[in-house]
Image (cartoon, rainbow, N blue to C red; front, side, top):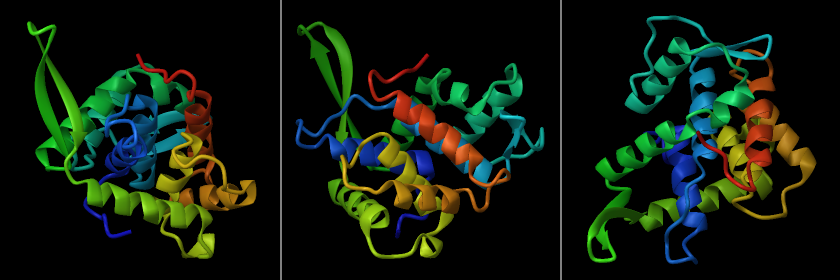
Length: 214
């Protein structure tokens, strides 16, 4: 996918927004989906690892070089140990809000100031670069359903596809076998052969109704 500069949580945020475009171009963002993307990216970068099912920082001084990812990494370091599934929802809105503001700053989303009842200030968000989101959606759909073998998909693209499917952003149509192959591919660079991707995907799938965040 030609979206290298975008982090996994940023890609998932745009995919969720694009999925809601028929409904006035806005969406109630899934914080758990965005958090799941951030967890997988930190694991793929070797900054988080799995220790008996617990998300564990590898290096207390390492940095991802991305304020959103580093914010989550600091949160994990400063908190009591938790399994991956817990981190998918625990204070997930902190991460999703940070990703949303990052995308506004980079011009992918726009913030629209409004007043509720003509009095109370409010901010709504909408897609600014809809063509980018639409292209990302089509490419992710191709990864999920296209003919390219899973081994030929990058671990990052595989992770985006698996998590998007877990959140049901594409509806039905992806075989269980294909999802399993992509899950293993997404975990190829992650210590614990795909177990991290599987765990966070299950948490996202469980959170479809309703989305959970704390």
